[in-house]
Length: 136
Image 1: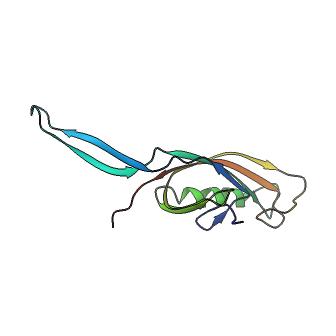
Image 2: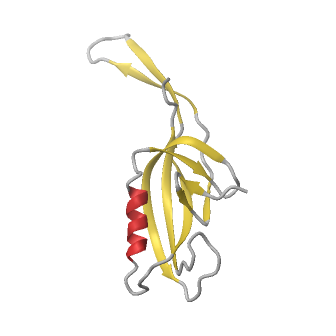
């Protein structure tokens, strides 16, 4: 089974239920012009959230700089198109990462398995995405 990931960044879990992309339209009207309008159409979805967990190994348990570095690396992807794989192996290409909100970082007494060797910190967060059609 594929590893849950966003771009090159792997997660222990990545869960959620994306809304499928569909046809949308918006009426474009001009002020003081009666009966004249046109419709702008496109393909997109409402924003959807995935919830992720990632273990992170830190050189210094009292100053987990690697946790902050990981958060900054994911936040650097905001506003860009990324490939996403969830827990179930579903994958989406060119999904727009709107926002990453870290929730909590927990310190674990013992590191067993995971993405990072010896990862004693567990980071949880919400990732807000939107799918869109890329013009060719």
